[in-house]
Image (cartoon, rainbow, N blue to C red; front, side):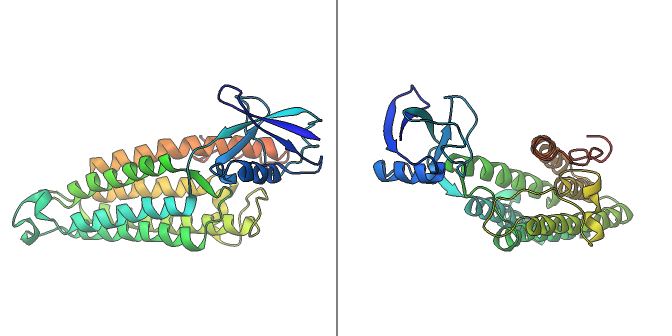
Length: 301
């Protein structure tokens, strides 16, 4: 049977493929790549309508109800880059930017700033910042399993700008010679809460890793493991985001720094958007999904 492939932009005919009813969309992507070398599989997205939802590449032609001379629309997603590469780049930046500004270079503070005394909180904050992003890099290398192999290259610049600029903004204020630290009691309590959130975030990531078999895109309902820090799964769909936000709130209280608070708020807003999307997807995909769970904030949101 023959399937016509049209562009989502203007409906231009791109190709006519001879396929078997049991062929998957992934196999169709391979055929298109042979015809148009710049359209490698990760750059392609099939749709049944020009502005419709992207189709699962593992579905067969027959499962989609396509017949001889049916049409599929193809969206060119643009140049792609591996998710792992994006994560490593956007996380390495904040680590090195903060560590550099922590040394009080003359470029930011002028000559002699590095010789002035620095508060203990500034030292602790630098350690926390470096540990957090080192943890993210190690998780990217050894823990995370990505459901999608790539993302558009343009997102790399946006993501890096967000992380790198905020890192410089926070580091400049916390490491400034005129920075005034809060009382030790406040900082130590916040440090303890930050530590719990970091451990909790890792515990959730490890549980999610074990939820998906290697090399598969299988989806299951996340549930608590024997690790007590994963009990948050009973209350929210995305406890990794809950712990992440908690960690940055703790960092803000520990440093009592407004830029850190702005970074925490910006992160919460974006993670709340992601959490809502994942929460809705879980409820849609699993009829027996726990009804009492919220998206990111227990009992509230």
